[in-house]
Length: 135
Image 1 (cartoon, rainbow, N blue to C red):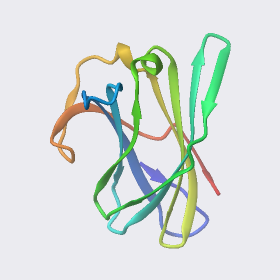
Image 2 (cartoon, one colour):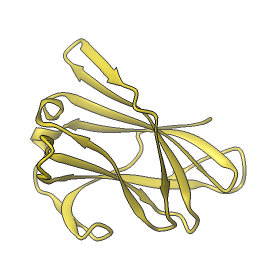
Image 3 (cartoon, rainbow, N blue to C red):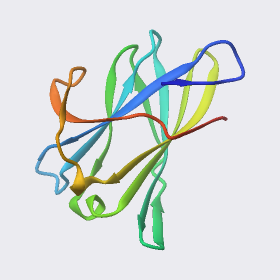
């Protein structure tokens, strides 16, 4: 998905969610997939959780370098978070442009029918940004 910016270039990324046990007490891996031909700097700004009308957020401020057409593990989520509606907010920067993007993961435990994510050589779910904006 292209993310409009003030300049003529577009920043493009997706998230991939895959269930995997790594003996860290968590069961979900969330990856950033860089769809651009240039490297991207990604900051995990916020992970928000919502249950009914209750919510809370983690503000990890994790900064990652994602190679061109590459991917990086962004976040590991435990089983507690899998029962909540989860939203991930990122700031991405490349080629002198910056944008804020959000991805809704929904309730992870309800995910069914995974697909092969070729970039990761594993099964999971691909997510496109639901909200974008300039930084």
